[in-house]
Figure (cartoon, rainbow, N blue to C red):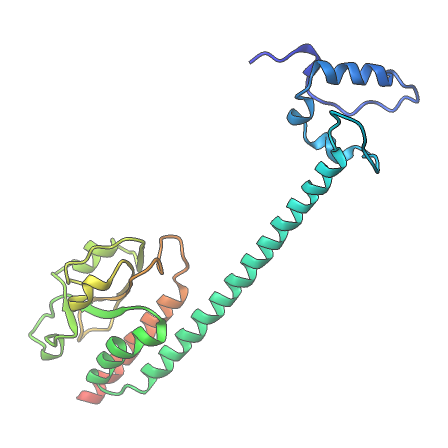
Length: 243
């Protein structure tokens, strides 16, 4: 779109000690370009507003500048509040994760590990369902046949998470019971983590599910990865205890 000649790109005037424009010239220019300040709002920040306005059909520019600064202050306040809320949330998540790890440290047998993950972790982590799902073992293993253990197809971990991916977060996940078993109907958002328990237990997935928007792509997964590593250690320890 072609602009009027009077509305050329704004440049700061050279300070040569002379006034090349009179007040009348400026006023005439503004009358010819009533949208000048709308197109160049930064000019307002450099203007010296009068302490008081009077008369009809006069725009209170001081009021405009005050409102503009007030909006900036409100934006800064909102940003500060967001930082505070995020810090509180992060501290809460960290505290819950620590509590979940402490609960798992007391599990000695395979049955204890399964019970803590399936029953205690949902309360400690403030989610609705936590489950473990494993691919088929090389030989029948009664420990993987329990009702609280979900079963994947051979290669199911890579099929769900992707090759070489350790975590996936879903804002919306529809599960047929493969990952969450009987609790699948409660799950809306989910976090899925790859488990590598060791030679005696096949690859699996740690699945956390929630009714609300607890999980979403782009969130950090460091604590979830940490929880998954703790489970792997606990499973290895439980196998030694069972033996």
